Image: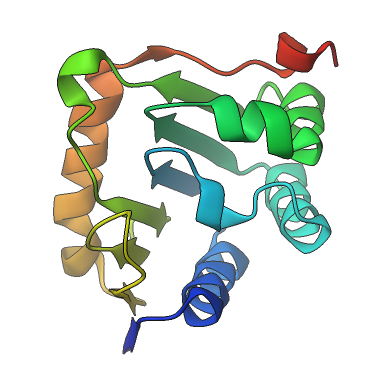
Length: 155
């Protein structure tokens, strides 16, 4: 199933659907995760459900400032589930990357073609559609360093 979107609400709805389908892995890349609402109560509850069931979450980002300032729930989640979450910050050489995506279990993906715009697509039950972005994530991950910890704001 494919679904195109071009509004904030539609992006967040598709992202929620990908998170709800996740069982084992979530990998996400975004310059700063501003539009992912990682500090929102409903997102926190969904990610806690996923992590409590043994899921693993990996985030790669350019700048953690938004999450550090605006997402205390996510920082608590990071503290509470440190064994299941890893966050890495990209090096300066990768800061020109501007796409944004979330992949669940290498099967479901929601992606925005450019992080400054809301146009994108969600694809479900399609490992071949998620594969290229997963390989891209793995390359970004390999170049990045640990970059966000729960202790940032004293939690």
